[in-house]
Length: 189
Image: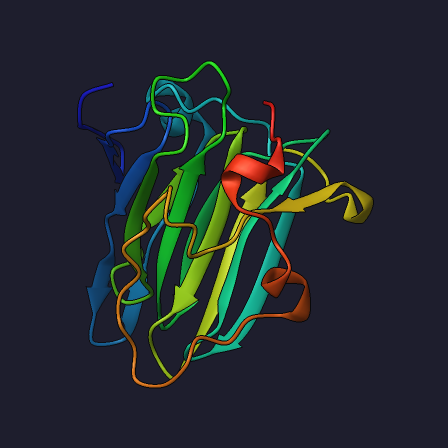
């Protein structure tokens, strides 16, 4: 898919097939703004055909890094964005037959811009909070199954994600501190 504008969305293809950066048109005046964040017909026309079944929201403080997460048996496609603040959002290709297996794509998601990131099934996902706080939302095309969680270390040198530097330390959950490196994770999508 080449970059294309459909309705109020501009879809930008990335170096990894299926991963898409999305700019959203905002309509604003002195009262505030309005924007569409999802319109099935426009996404379908861009080749991003998904049946979203669950929406999630989190709020985190600066330096929190959530990820890199995936579900093993019930993989999820995710459409992600910030409602408040900024995050650096990352998708890592875990599709075993993909020519970009182990590669990553990232984008700064900024609530002021309203931009979004589409991550297909078969990817690990994570984000780092860049502002004092960030409220992060995502639509998923599969339900969350806690027993099906998997993860990869955010700083795996083989993947080589270029995380932005922040003032202070990176804050991880106890679970995220225990993730394996990609070569040891035995992930097969």
